[in-house]
Length: 90
Image (cartoon, rainbow, N blue to C red; front, side, top):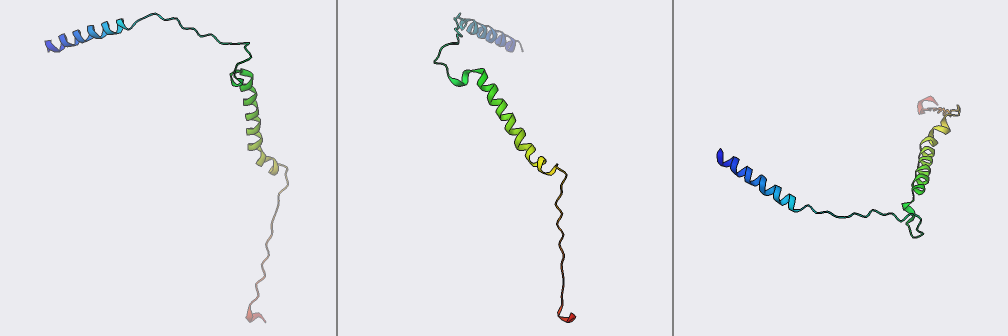
C-alpha cells in the first residue's frame, strides 16, 4: 500500500511539473473590423434580425393557413343517395 502512495505522489509531482512547463503568456488580439467596407454581409446583426422576422412571418402564415379557411363558419355538407333496383322488383 505504501508503494502505491509513493507512486501516486511521484506521478502527481511529474504531472504538475509538466503542466507548469506548458504555461506561457500570449497576447490575444480580438479586433473586429467594424466600419470596414470589406466585412461579410452575414456578420451584421441587422441581417439576422430581418431574417428571423421573415422566418417567423412565413411560419405563422403557413401554420395558420389551414385554420383560416375553416374558421369562417361555413361548412360543406355532402349527401349521398343510393337507389337499389333488383331484377325481382320488375
